[in-house]
Length: 337
Ligand code: UT7
Image 1 (cartoon, rainbow, N blue to C red):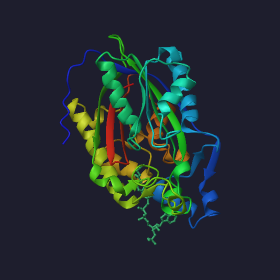
Image 2: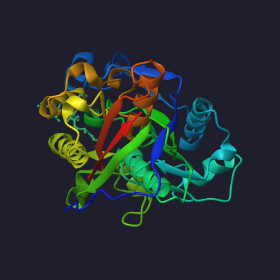
Image 3: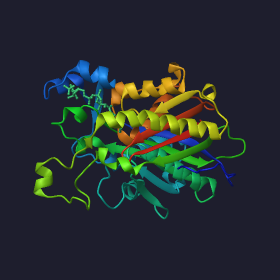
Image 4: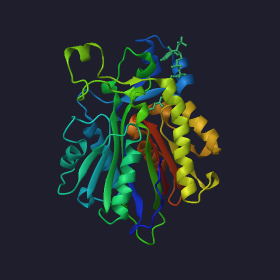
């Protein structure tokens, strides 16, 4: 049971900059038609995806995250020296250890503060934001680089038509900063939830201590994503609905007071179904799944940055974000941008 209550904090947090990185290579549904038993029509109608971006062979998660961070620093009018914490939500780190956040810290030429990864599946960025918010609110950090970055295509089984068409690669970065009294921008609240009883319906089976890498694990494709899509689908809608309702209720918001809804971009039908359940005006729902597919922890920060730069989300708008993924995890973040 989630027993979080809203407590008064010493400081408030705000979002002071956003950035994203999408790799250049575009793979569309027709490219899959040539390789596996699928059609553009199936992919489009069942998922809403038309194309996705793939990282280059020599690109790792920190390479993409670095570009997104530079972008975020520019938008916040900050230099990397202003950052005093880095948190990266990812399930595809550069290495099992050290953390991608430490590698990113080196790339940004800064040191001397905490940098760590969060493994929380697709809501990795929401989890990271929840932690960042609390560091800022209790006065322990001033400018946290909160990154969501994944290269799922490097752990995808391209013989499994049920999963391989779903994923793309991307990185998103948001700078969460201490707000001043005069600031209109505010991180209102956030929450994170997990239900480990479903850990095995969305899993990368091999490569950890349970099943270390061996010739057999490679031959059986056990280093790639295993997902029971139907089960995940049903739980996704319910979990995000609960996470959204909970954070709105606790802060006295109703759906009419939300200007924009950004949910995890895993399936257009999930996004629409959640929108219907929350009774949100469809024009207020940010959707980019047709271009980028499911980029795991990157979906929300990428969509946020895109909507800000496109001029959709403006300073003062209330934005509700929610995600869902492996763990099973879910969470929500409510901000005034
Ligand atoms: O980011 C983490 C969270 N992930 C998600 O939220 C994903 C949630 N799940 C989903 O988005 C959907 O379940 C999928 C898109 C993965 C699958 O859609 P579905 O409507 O649940 O399809 P299904 O798995 O029930 O499969 C229906 C049929 C099957 O054929 P039969 O057994 O009915 O003959 C599949 O073999 O569709 C077939 N199928 C495909 N056909 C053409 C599965 N993948 C494909 C494909 N092309 N790529």
